Amino acid sequence: MAKQSTPTSIPDALKNFDSLPDSAWVREPIVKALLGCSSATVWRYAKMGIIPAPQKRGPRISAWNVGELRRSLVQRAA
Image (cartoon, rainbow, N blue to C red):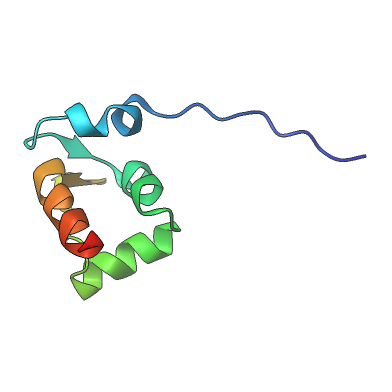
């Protein structure tokens, strides 16, 4: 018998990414969903300079600036 998966809800930050101000911050799950890749790939892209590196927002919190992320996504698409 196949295990049924429950639909996961899409975070508001991802649904409304286009309307977020450039000064907003997003965490790794949002970046991962935007890029359509794994967590490891997100961190690899940041290390390689494909996307901007996250900034520490607290002792255990890293986040990406929306404005910087948008600019890198536009460059990546071009």
